Length: 230
Image (cartoon, rainbow, N blue to C red):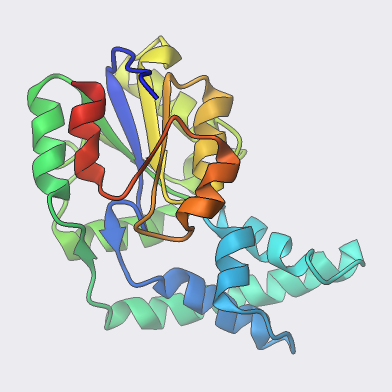
């Protein structure tokens, strides 16, 4: 595709896109859900929960086999509480890294006046713990962090992107790009009216799965962004 709009801001998903945490969040989610007596595979959790606010992710996984909405909601609350405890324990010993070239890409973009935003379906506490492990600082490494705690409606609703635009003074969504490793990331960008919506194959979902979101491009590396916006 040859679509190359002028870009003033790029919104990056965190886990699986800029942060490599070996899917520990979704493995923790899987464990909490299966401790209720289920047997969901990690692939199922990634397919139905990838990129979403995590309580909603649990509900959407349960919906694949549950039919009773009250049971879905009650089991989801139980699993979510256990998930938060499991994730906290996992993060204490987790070796978090970033994908090759991510930090240099952020600098490259910011040097050219393109605002760099991280957004995530994590709550703020979880997101900040990841940034601390990477020694990333909001206002230095990136311009802004927006989490599920900052909005009423999480992905695929456009709220997090709209908050970022407001805070950074970007008024034209057609000059915003969104990139993430799940279909829900792509849908979020489209719902916000982003001029460029990108999938990346480093995280939750495969190229074949990302195609379902009909992104403008599917990347194997974030560094390909340089060519796209050149």
